[in-house]
Length: 106
Image 1 (tube, rainbow, N blue to C red):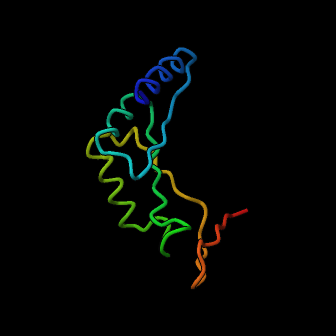
Image 2 (cartoon, rainbow, N blue to C red):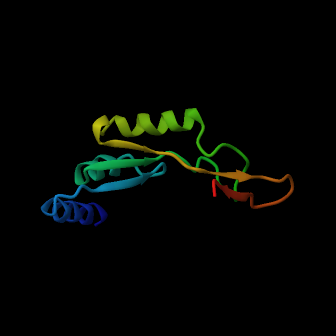
């Protein structure tokens, strides 16, 4: 249903000379990625949230995590449709406390 919605939205946007981008989470099923890419003009790969504030300490998006995610997407989507989304936030874990404190550039 979501892919059909995105396809309809793209058609309406195109009629108004607008483009449509769709964000895709790292956890998205591999099978949904090419369908969403064909239904939208651009696919924004959300290359972050490798670790979360309620989980164990670690990077927002390590190089290995980002490369694996891009490899997953680029096996079925043309690189000219892919936009890399990067997180501009951080988590500050304090030993023995949960969750981590969420930090932003503001």
